[in-house]
Amino acid sequence: MAYIFVTGGIISGLGKGIVTASLLRILKSRGYKVTAIKIDPYVNVDAGTLRPTEHGEVWVTEEGGETDEDLGHYERFICESLTKDHNITTGKIYYSVIEKERRGEYLGKTVQLIPHITDEIKNCIKNVAKKTKSEIVLIEIGGIVGDYENIIFLEAARQLNREENVVFVHVSYVPIPNKLGEPKTKPTQQSVKLLRELGIQPDFIICRSRENLDEVRKQKISLFCDIPKENIIDDPDIETVYELPLIFEKQDLSKKILNKLNLSEKITNSLDLEQWEERTRILKQKDRIVKIGIVGKYIGTGNFKLADSYISVEEAVKHACAFLGYKPEIIWIDSTKIELNLPKIQGIIIPGGFGITGIEGKLKMIKYCRENNIPFLGLCLGLQLAIIEFARNVCGLKDANSTEIDENTKNPVIDILPEQREIIKNKKYGATMRLGVYPAVLKEGTRVYNLYKKFNLIKNNVIFERHRHRYELNPKYHKILQNNGMIFSGFSPDGKLVEFIELPNHKFFVATQAHPEFKSNLLNPSPLFYGFVESCLK
Ligand code: GLN
Image 1 (spheres, helix red, strand yellow):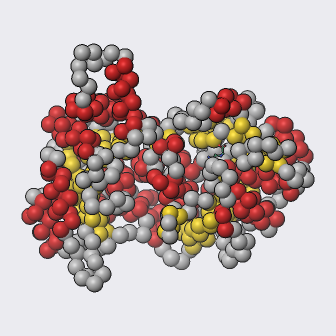
Image 2 (cartoon, rainbow, N blue to C red):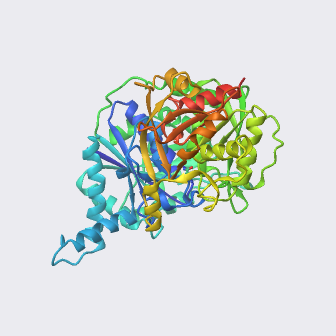
């Protein structure tokens, strides 16, 4: 068993998650069974209660974990599912240690940061390694070196280095200030110094910069940080994240890491990344473009745009587009400021969401798509709003609403599940939604059925998608919606919950209560996203 720790320096947002995901990709392609863990130093037990503009999208795992978005990057790059055990937070570690203390498991002992917290961290890491039978485990430590919050995790990493086969990869930033025009290595030197103060000597430095570094800068970093020059790896600005594994491989990074770990290259010739490379090439070209609008409320922080809140939706669009030979141009539309003049937008996606902000804007957009034959894909909240819009404007239920938006609506077309009502009454908000993978039975002959069939994902009419919601289409309104022309293309196996809807005589008007974006990757696009993009091209 070998471990690779990925740390970060200087600023956040350097793409450590993508670096870790790319390392996973190339090591897997070298024939190794790999997996990854994300450590988040915040006190929340999981990411379920975080606002997306604070910490990016909440990723949902198959078994229903609500985790950091980096697990999404890992899954997309290794094309395998992970579980919530692969996301460790400060809250989770302390929670578990405190529970043990109350159960008397440390009876007579003073429970301390070292060794009890660090032991708990190491055990969590080793358990994932054991459970997944992985040969190499990558552990990405959130935040940057020098933060208060992650020190105890770095200490655990230092200890593990004495017990196991460990390599340290440090992701650093080499700025090229505009007026100077010269790459500056001092911040990197200082962040490595900070790391060494904690007893960690990195084996590799990944240099995030505008461009590749020249020999002079590499020499400097090598000298000051005590790292062989060939282990200083370029990580320049790129157009699409899917290029990074290819860039790393050009620098022989998987071989160098395996070498450092004393592991052989199981696959010695060039890696089987042809399809990956081809789709990456499509995402870089500029001739075949499709313009897609995503309507959301978590679009910005302060004066800056921030798209990470919907990262999986954006990536799923890219996967479907690349499969069809196109590059998407994504237009972010703020649901609180909807204008219906949409020059050249070829289709609209309404992703998931919570609360009342921006709802009316989204409803306006759905009506516009429905009436003007513009491809529309609704995801979770997107389905719920498509129902509300249809109930109001086609079925004539003018005050139709979701009880999440208006508790006292006379026509609660979207309502909370009875078991969820209890949960909310008792204020048990953490990890209590309808979470994770659920089966749906699809109706033969529907558009949704045909799309899943095309990708061979349907068996006995059943498909599986991940979920994260509390509200549902109210069964009392099934009849009236159907009588007015809405098609329910998929139900939960007990026939109670509507999972997919579609409208006939429309270029593409499909919505699902699930989040198919969580199962999409570059090599296997999601059927619904594929169907949507294909219609946008018509
Ligand atoms: N807020 C809605 C619900 O809880 C939709 C959730 C979502 O879009 N993920 O059911």
